[in-house]
Image (cartoon, rainbow, N blue to C red; front, side, top):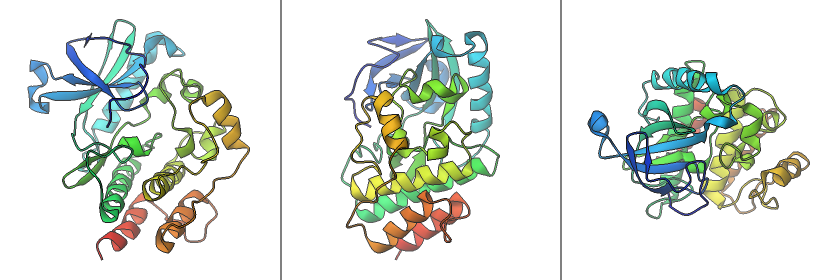
Length: 279
């Protein structure tokens, strides 16, 4: 992850609850790196906080309970392909979600240059993380390159769509942090509930970005969600020219719900990717 980008809901705070903020992470403005308090010393010296404005919730009194319940469900899924979710709390007008910190960066901003095999392995790991959630009846809701966190043995999938439990519609406006519209399935953008199938679209879009450096909507400026959303909804996805044939086919199979060879599960997608990078 990188430290550039606008201030998010946390603003220029030096402390959130009992976490000392070190610096912002990523471009969304919703993540900060913080020092772990003594009570969480087993997690490691540093921790990541995702910070949401509590007043953005439909029902602020029940917001913390909804997010906490969702996090408990996600945290109960034991998987080497998921970033560990630690706790949810509320402090001074904010709801924060604490998770483990991995220093390898993300597919959006890797700490070091990746080989193509490492890119494919990272997306495969993300797909396996999504599959593990799906097998427990949970849609991830928010798969995108910045949420695929790299480490020495591949990657882990982070940033589950907890904000959607506060106010589903508002996640598309930017009020709950910068939305990753170009990686959301059209059905989700149209207001339908996220599913295993919509996560598969997001994995295909993430693979496309990791392999080409472009989103499926290169003509759309995502910096303003209010204009980006209708632009994406009125145009179809564009697969970049020059992708290796097998990668292009996998991307197309993931983003087209009617594709005859669409992976049936995220695990099937991971198997297809593994067959490429393990050659």
